[in-house]
Amino acid sequence: MPTEPEVVVVQGGVPSKVVWQVELIVGVITLGLGIALAFHPSTSLSVVCVFIGALLILGGIFHFIRALDHDEQHRAWVATAGLLEVVIGVVMIRHLDLTKSAIGLLIGVVWIVQGIVALMGGIMGGAKNVRGWAIGFGLVSLIAGIVVVSVPSSSVNALATLLGIWFIVMGLLELVGGFVLRSQLKKAGI
Image (cartoon, rainbow, N blue to C red; front, side, top):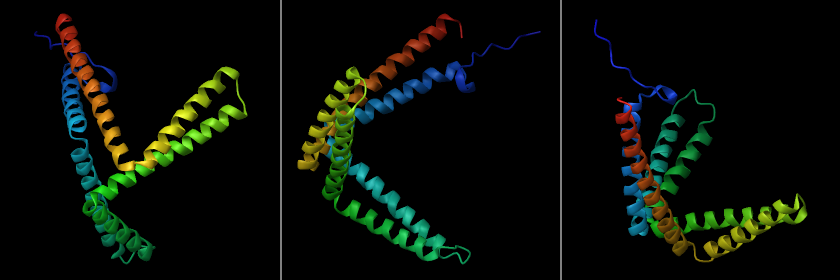
């Protein structure tokens, strides 16, 4: 009686023969995104802004459709939310530079708040070895936030380039990991 080939299963019930292929696909996609972001950050950011704007417009249309339902309890609020989503989506698509600057401002403000909170936490207490790290992190975050808020459009392009370089490194590591896993599976006879 012939026996069926043994399939090694990893976490989540996914056959290990598939895992290395998925890792290669993820590596190629990550590498491609990294190259696009690193070498064309402004264009890549514009594409992202258009996608977000389109999603907002579609979400607004969905809310308008919900507002037409007589059983909807908060029709006026749902319609208002739909209107705001459509307007914001159109503005995001129509004024890409404004959208990129808004994203830069948001990142900068978050970093400033994060820096102030870390500084306060480091100055006000805690263990001495942790305080130094918190103060250092707070200063770096605060300075980075001020720089990004000062020139949000240029900062977002620089951040996109850095993110692209990071994606390139991660994509290459994913590709190497996929080939290593494939090699190990072949050695194991799977």
